[in-house]
Image (cartoon, rainbow, N blue to C red; front, side, top):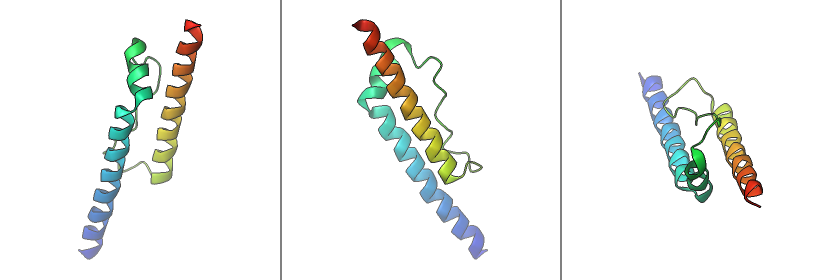
Length: 82
């Protein structure tokens, strides 16, 4: 029983961190700018914060790839305006 509670507590902490990361990302200027251009288009969606099957390192990699895609899209938009 203690192992289950420890797992639940560990997951709750991980979920909270994931939710905070997504919240911060969605409030960022680059996210707002890119979403305001023409939607997020072909950018892969953010990983599901509820998915316990995504290990921490993989989840971090997915978020990093998402941020990179946002920066690339914003750079393309700014390049097209010049």
